[in-house]
Image (tube, rainbow, N blue to C red; front, side):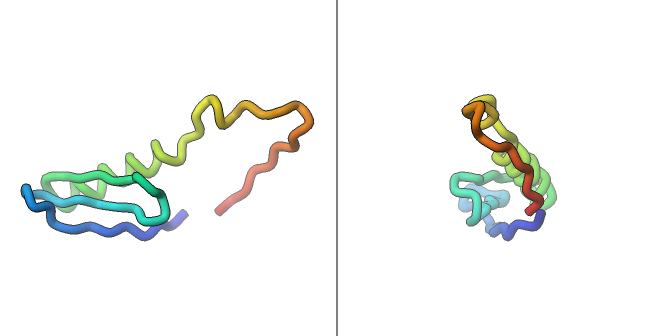
Length: 67
């Protein structure tokens, strides 16, 4: 999966990273490399299903879709 990220210098120092396609998915780091590693972890956590997402009515059909 590919996503567009926006990385910019923070006013306080370091870098802030946003993922426009994932509202609220933001991270930061002291260095550019740290910020990129942190946003990868944030994206993985953002996309990880929570237990409520896994509950479904018995008549629902469950499919998996590769994006």
